[in-house]
Image (cartoon, rainbow, N blue to C red; front, top):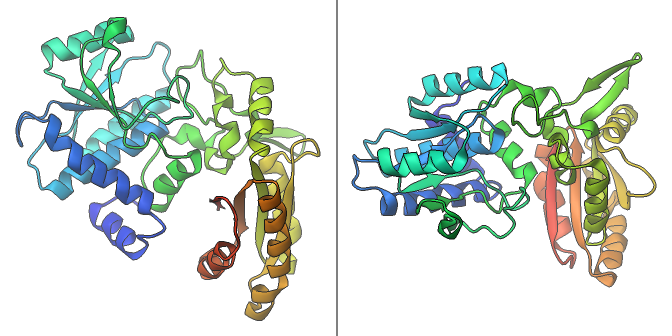
Length: 350
C-alpha cells in the first residue's frame, strides 16, 4: 500500500496517545520551518536525504508539516553523493522523488566544501537532518543546533526533529504509517552508507537448513543498531549493552496461545540472541484466548518484578512479542502503569 497524507492523518488521530512522539516532531517542524524560510514561497530550508531510514523519517515528517501549514512550497533536499553507493538506495531515492515531488541538489562527498557551496550558491539557511543522540558524535546535539562555525563550517542551523527518538520509534513510524523505506533494511542492514563501510548486522543473522539468512532491521533491539557500521566493533557494542543492562531490566511478553508459544520463543531467541551473560529478563506468557486468565495470570509476576527493579533503582524495558497485542495492549499498559517503575519503555515487535 502506498503512503497518502489522508491515511496518515486518520491513523494519527485515532491513535494519538500511542503516536504522540510523531505528532510532537511534526509540530516542532511546523513551528520551526517559518522561522528559517525567506517567505512562504521561497524555501531556504533543505532536507538532508540520502535514502537511509532516519533521513526517510524526516523527509516524510517535513512533507507532512508543509502540508499542514498549507504552504505552496517546493520541498528541497540535498544528497551528498557516495562513491560505490548501493543501487537499491539510488532506486529508492528516485521512487521518493516521484511520490513526494521534491527537488534535489546532488553534491560531492567532501562534506565541508559542499556545505559552503550550498550556503553560497543555493541560499541554504538551515538543514533538516535525521540525527539521533545515539548516532556517532550526536550525543550532545539539540533539536536546534548551530553548525560548527569555529571548525570551518559555514553558518547555518541544523534542525533535528528526531534527535531524541529511539531506534524502535523510527521503525514504528515507518511501518505503522506505511512509509516506504529502502529494501536493504529487509536484508539485514541497519545502517546504510556505501558498499565499503556498511555491513549486514550480525545480530540479525540466523541459520536455517545449514544456510545463513538475515532478518529485517525492524526486529533488532535498540542496543545493536550500530553494528552495521564497520567502524564499530561487536566487542564495543556488547560493552555498551552490558552498561545498558545495569540501568534497564528486560521483560518479554509473549502474546498468543499455547499452540503458538513454542514457535514464538524460538523466533524470539533467534532475534534477540539471548545468552546467559547478558540476559536479565522476565518472560511472561499471555493467553489471548482467555481474557480472565490474561487479567490475573501474570499480575503477581509484574508486581514482584517491579519491586526488584525499584529496589535496584532500575528502569524497565518491555518487549511485547506475538499476536493479539492490539486487543490487549491498553489493558497491559494500565497494569504496568500501576507499578512504581522509575521509567518504562515499550518495544512492540511485530
